[in-house]
Image 1 (cartoon, rainbow, N blue to C red):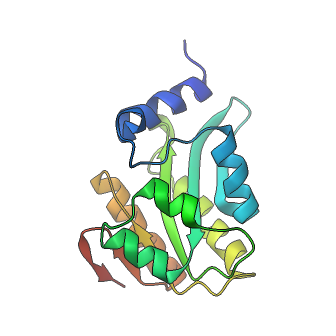
Image 2: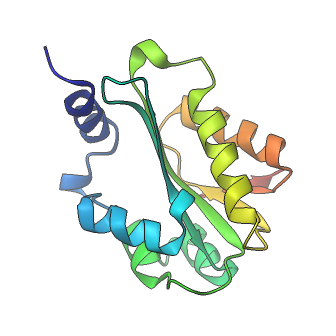
Image 3: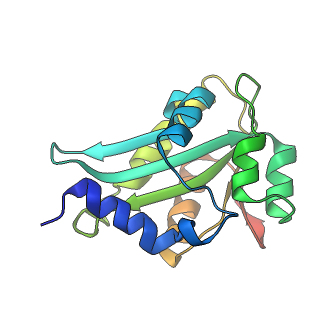
Amino acid sequence: MPTHFERMLQLADDIFATKDDPEQLDVDQDVLERLRSLHPSTVSEYDEGEGPAAWILLIPTTLELMQQFLDQTLSEKALFESTLPGISYEALYLCSAMVLEEYRRKGIAKRLTVSAIEDIRKEHPLKALFVWTFSEEGRLGAEAIARLTGLPLHHRGMPATS
């Protein structure tokens, strides 16, 4: 039987197919380290001792880069590469949230994300969230997070919601 970690890797591949899309961020150890250099709360996981059952990735960035991404003039990978450490971040990209099936609908991803946003807000004046959803669950989750944090949510290819 595959481990939680192996199942999470397979889930990421099934949902995002990053290996087949050079525009998307293909997350590896170097990417995780760079995310943590932007802010330690950009990477979170839920683990009950058997390996990760949920992962979230967030990319803090500028409003200018957010708008380029939303306008589809900047890819996800380019957004990540263009975001520099040590600057003031005003926007937060809800990059990914993955939860193993038996852990879904328990609020785990929502709690992890809201907690991470609260941590990032202590140091950065976040004014907006943005997302590029791959599922209805992802869209609904992002909208719930926006409501809980009081931040406007922008969807790639869709109008903003609050």
